[in-house]
Amino acid sequence: MSKGRAAAAESEVAERPLRFAVIGAGMAGILSAIRLEEAGLGDFTVYEKAERVGGTWRENTYPGLACDVPSHLYSYSFELNPDWSHRFSPGPEIQAYFERVARKHGVERRTRFGDEVVRCEHADGRWRIETKSGHRDEVDVVIAATGVLHHPNLPDIPGLDAFEGAVFHSARWDHGVALDGRRIGVVGTGSTAVQIVSALADRVAKLVLFQRTAQWIMPQENPPFSEEEKEAFRRDPESLRVAHQNLSTLFTAFSNGVVDAGSAQMKMIEDACLANLENSVKDPVLREKLRPTYRAACKRLVISPDFYQAIQKPASELETAGIERVEAKGVRTRDGRLHELDVLVLATGFRPDRFIRPTEVIGRGGVRLDALWEKRPIAYLSISIPDFPNLFLLNGPNGPVGNFSLIEVAELQLAYVLKLVDLLRSGRCREISPSREATERFEAERVEAAKSTIWATGCRSWYLDDRGVPSSWPFSFDRFRDEMAAPKLEAYELL
Ligand SMILES: Cc1cc2nc3c(=O)[nH]c(=O)nc-3n(C[C@H](O)[C@H](O)[C@H](O)COP(=O)(O)OP(=O)(O)OC[C@H]3O[C@@H](n4cnc5c(N)ncnc54)[C@H](O)[C@@H]3O)c2cc1C
Image (cartoon, rainbow, N blue to C red; front, side, top):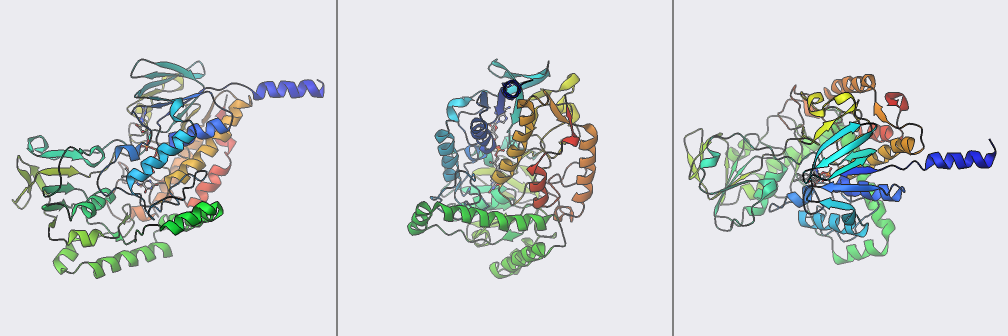
């Protein structure tokens, strides 16, 4: 074949058209749409069941909501923001940021809002998509950006329905319910509960925090950026990039430390949390109630500048007796006491093992994802699943979670996915999925590595799966970066 014809043939192959469905228009779905467009892969639809972009930041609107990694790190690397108001900016500002970025890059007009994907079936080499409204699509590649902290975990407390006041999950905040001067109960002691307590302690008549497990609190000031600082970032975008890079380096060191329970980083965090407790809580009885019996960072580390101050305010009460049941007038604890309340907030977290479910996903040969994941979800490198070709998960099972920016995680994952997509685009294969052997090998290595992480040092947390094995990335963050840098094709089946 002549050189010209060979090049023409190559470009013909290179132009294999690919259609994509991106499920979810949260941080990872917006990112996917932007990167697909940039890569010249413009034939896609984003499906979002809600009416707006934003995911987590659209759904969570509770008082005190803020990110707990610094804002200049919790930003897309290609859309750094000189205008963040605080070191850890409030939730509405983060939601506005995602909306702004989505609008700027035309993501909203590529999104079908209010249409939940209910079924994805792999047939004849493509994915057939079906939505709640009955809309159908057929695509070559599915990117599932459906979130990890998305399905509220509702506690099984007897009598919840009997409560005469208002009761809601923290991710379904009812803004029609008045708070000022009223009696509020908060169930749970994770990052969300801590942020709510800090925000409400001065506003309400009574604030009862129902604690099952005490938390280590990492003190972190949250100063605002001055106008001069913001102006300096605007004038010198390079300084913004350096700030992002420096924070990423700092948090990489932290993340590398988390996976080694004996590391110096863990010791440093433990010391800081312990000093915070000893120095901030005056009453020795309250101090002991607030003292965790497990190691710092075993549960997701709670970051707060002022929780200990808030829980010592006159309206606040820490209740550790355990909840017996909810009654019409309030919460009865195991010691027989009734805490009369007007509002009960369930800050009880999420079901992190759901991912794309309840969407029905049917892979090659009729394999059902729900059946495959019956015990627990697994995925090769957290991104792809044997027998589910050309289906890629962002922030999927066993990926890095914890006190790190999930934006950086999703950016690395998506760059990896686009390298796999190149194999489809170039005609090297029509279908790509990891082999069962590679997935099982990875899973076995992951479970072994999880044993020496801080998360396995003896606490109950949402990181643990049904066997008590930490379900997040147990290797260093440096290894995650290395893995994401280039797919190891020997782990994949290319058809
Ligand atoms: C209170 C809270 C605070 C947090 N703070 C931080 C932080 O400080 N730093 C950090 O890194 N991370 C934080 N996180 C984690 C946060 O979830 C991620 O940072 C990020 O927002 C996840 O983005 P995502 O796009 O992967 O998922 P999500 O934001 O959950 O978005 C998923 C989207 O998919 C849509 N969707 C789901 N299923 C379907 C379907 N079948 N069809 C159509 N649409 C669907 C949902 O409606 C949603 O819009 C926090 C989470 C919570 C809950």
